[in-house]
Image (tube, rainbow, N blue to C red):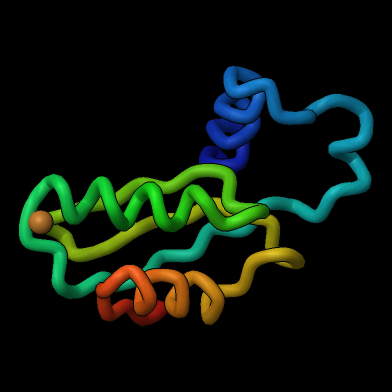
Length: 97
Ligand SMILES: [Cu+2]
């Protein structure tokens, strides 16, 4: 529940819609991916940007040393598989965990 509150707060800051219509939207889902191939901070930035560019992705937290990315997203528009595919195209091997 805590990350839902954080996602809403971030959406408010970025100007995304969180008003009355949010009641009709599906609850955000959190997906954690193992991401392999990140060697430095630039890789982590590239992974974050690639994921944030996906419509329906709300927040992304990348952990370089932990080899993972935690993504909060609309569960209808974004699936774990689609996130894996985006990272594959960006040059990183990823899998749900
Ligand atoms: Cu790098």
